[in-house]
Length: 299
Image 1 (spheres, rainbow, N blue to C red):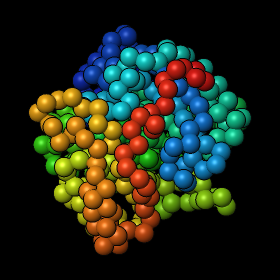
Image 2: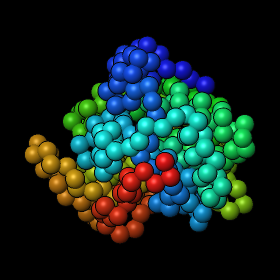
Image 3: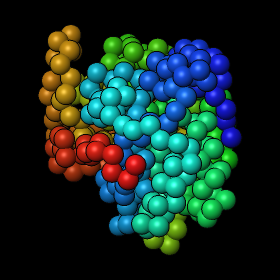
Image 4: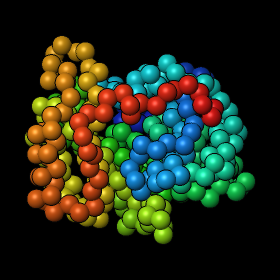
């Protein structure tokens, strides 16, 4: 179990908030858990959702500030309900009883101390599902190492190669340097992917990359780096579901969806590199159909 400290340093910002005293950090997280939704989710990669669904818990708050975030209702910490660690442990068991393939923790690291405590309780009471840490990728390796005994699957983003994009779009300094180091730690501690007889992942790493309009060159740099460092030891998920919610006039390229030509170009590049363990999406940008209602279901 990880414990909250008087100077929080769970994420790369290391803002030093005294969360033990109830102060909130940059992420919006304080002493208490805040959850916006806990339900079966069917929109993850096929080996995560399957037919039964992924037992997904959406946590409020985020260490990043992506100007195009489609979950901003919770990432800004506005939606959600304060719950106890004991209630979170009950939620995990309720999702298992509903037939979930796994417990899927969405944007969890700023609540890692409370989550690991809840997992200890629920495991003692029969929780046996794989645990998915669903993260934006901008995590410090120390936090990755700290949850080693609580993480079976890493479903992580690799958003940017170019640090100027990371700074402009997510206020995330040194994104690639930090995210790449953490990804190495994830792969090191998780090892080769393992699937059950139904093709549901039990252990492994999936790296998601959202193609951004006007920035396919950055997508290709990320894919080349992933291939050169991991090859087919990991799975990649190349997404075209960018939803044009950005209103920042400095970046007009983000006011539109990703074109079919842009997405196909990135997919062709991945195939040329040699990726076989890859998920791709069909059709154009899906817009808000991928955004669940943060209505406190299951909380």
